[in-house]
Amino acid sequence: MQDCTFCKIITGEIPGEILHKDNKVVVFKDINPQGPVHILIVPTKHIESILDLTPEDNEIMGELIYRAKLMAEKLGVSEKGFRLVINTGKNARQAIYHIHAHLIGGRKMTWPPG
Ligand code: 5GP
Ligand code: ZN
Image (cartoon, rainbow, N blue to C red; front, side, top):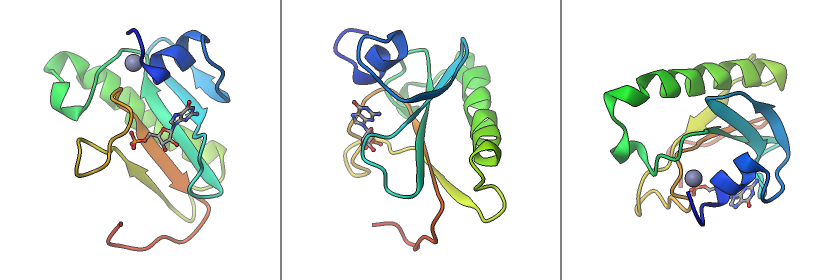
């Protein structure tokens, strides 16, 4: 998709610190980390937000969550725990309209989120 930052990172048009890539899901470091571990887990398919999902995307979203588990283990945050967040729309301050899950860990968090 033209003018989508995450599509450009996926195709290599703009740089990203990519930690994993397969045909369904890409993982790269967030440019502005909110914890010792802050990665983004992103489907290779351009889907703007959760509100645009169709049943066809169930497999992709399943892969995304499963990849989060594998990355949490790989990055050493599975034992102490981590947060997996998908911001959706204005009130949640979604900034990039290409679905992505934030995996944040390595520190103790507060609840409710800000
Ligand atoms: P959102 O608010 O849409 O859930 O989060 C977007 C996230 O993307 C933010 O945490 C922001 O730091 C990150 N981000 C924005 N632009 C870039 C970029 O060019 N490269 C990387 N690696 N992360 C980005
Ligand atoms: Zn995109």
